[in-house]
Length: 238
Image (cartoon, rainbow, N blue to C red; front, side, top):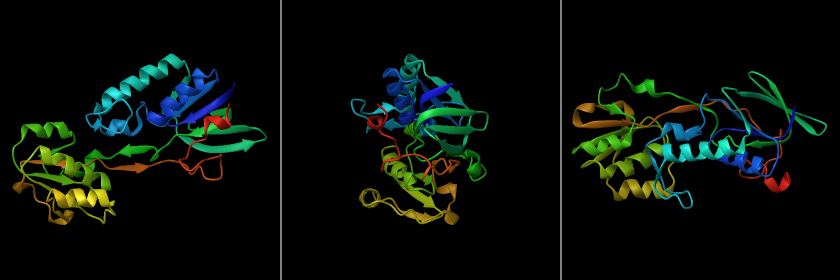
C-alpha cells in the first residue's frame, strides 16, 4: 500500500495532523515509537495546560483522551511501538523504515516535537521516600517543598508549586540556561536554586522530581522537506 501521508509522532501535533489529513480524504498512517499515544502528555497527565486555544486549563490526560477520540473518527491507520529508523526518498516516494516494517508514502510529516523519549523516573528513587511525580498531590501539604530537576521545565514546576507550600527550593546539577521569564519567576517568588549535590530531604515535607527523558529520534534534516517548525505544511500536500 502507498499512503498519501505518513505522520511520524503520536503526540498532540501528530494526532491532529493525522486527523486533519484523513479528514481531507488522504490515505494517512501514523507511526509512534511508544506503545501508547500522547507523546510528552504522558509525562504530565495531571498537568494543567494553558496554551491551547479554547481549552484553557485543561488537564493533559483529558486533552489526550479528546485527541484520541478525534483520531478514531479519522479511521487512519495507527502503528504503535514502531521506531522510525530510516527515511529514504526514491523518485517520488518516501520509504519509511521502522523497527517492524517499511512504509511507502507520498508525503512525510515529522511531528516528533522534542523527540521520542524514554521516561527515567527510577533514577532518583533512592534519594528520598518523599519523592512524588504528580504535582496536584502537593495540595495536601503545608510546608517547604523541594524540586529536583535538570531542565528548564523544573524551574517552571518550581514556580507553579509555590501555590502548594510555604516555600519552594530548586535543586539541579547543571546550568539551566533559563529564559528571562523563568528567571524572573524564580526571583519574584524567592525560589533559591542550589546544587543537586547539596540536597537533603530532611528540610522538606515533600519532594517533587521532574521526570527526565532521553531522545531517540533520527535526524530528519535533509531527509524530508521541512519548515522552521519541523512540519511539512498541508499546503505542500493538497
